[in-house]
Image (cartoon, rainbow, N blue to C red; front, top):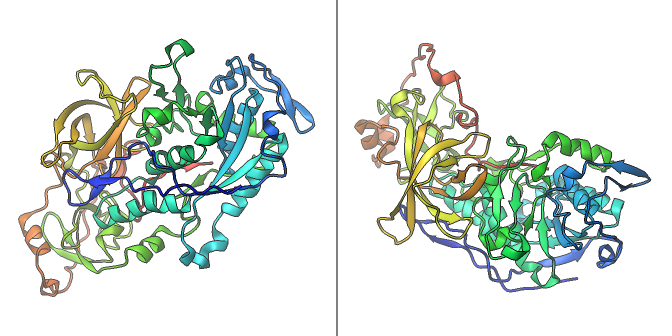
Length: 512
């Protein structure tokens, strides 16, 4: 079948503290253009008549020729206690996680239809097409569906992904920020454009292989908000990437893996004898396949030679290919002797990168920062007198924090000033901060450039040299002396907050 719907409009608005748009990511309401093609030998309606529903999860069900015993607790995030089977649209990537999620929903008696989202976007990368893994992904997805007779549909959201995710990433890098494509993809594509696209198909819920829990209100309290909670596996938990959803989106979602540790998901894949049971988790930017991120940046942003200056002295140390190749805290790729050197600041206007060997000095740490483009999952701001925790990046690390709402200087949009209970060295403008109360994720926003006047101290000489129009007047780079070994915290990193070790790629999730 082929559906054509209205174009999806970009969701951008001017930043509060910068001349270019930053993410606001409201719920997508316009219908997107997309095409939907069947990829199943079974009729589309086959899964709607092939199941008998048992409201009490059974521990035995068929997988191929063998009956398999599964702890009913594993179905506790599958809404198996409903008095009738649900119609569930399951996002299937071809990886282990989404495949197990599908099988658990099927075991719980629900009527499932699988959907594979194809978002490869650039024909001018034809020389890499054979390396893009979507064909292998689709093969595994079809194999998983064929085991239990679930139909599989292929959804083409190429244009929507380009206009709402990829173009935003490119623009953020041009402005010196480090975006997060996973948050954008969840909000605008998987649970945005896709949900809009299937609205007329009368599915009760949309499911995926994310590690998170959604607690929906009971039937007699349907007007109460749904709640996003941490998964049982705190290491794999992906609530950070789901923290910018709207309440209307959250109410449509089921995450069957929210009750199961990753190790058990792998065990279930083996029990089900899934065709992809031994497949490794993927790690990378979903629209690139095996293309190097640096090649993508060169193609869409280009290269522009600039200088590298030492932040403390203003010494001219070397040249770089463009400030957009670097993010704050980055270490590798600088090609400077006598390190380790770290990127500490960037002058976007003059294409200058400032570096230092003293990135972890105690007097250069950050505790306070501002967050804009706020989205509260309940639909309204929380009580700001409450105690909060936050994540400033994906991972198991939480900070206790205080949060204060204030109006932006040049916009009526609210921002929050966040004060962490301890210092963090890896704060990057453009990344998200997710807020929590206990196990509940309450929302998130985008980290802004304003650091409450606590940015890395760049000396006046370095700032003046950065503004020099004719950089040839700097002469040749200085000869860098080897820094004496120290025992400070250069070699000791907290969980998840060490510096980036390569090109300034978007920080992405590990998925399967």
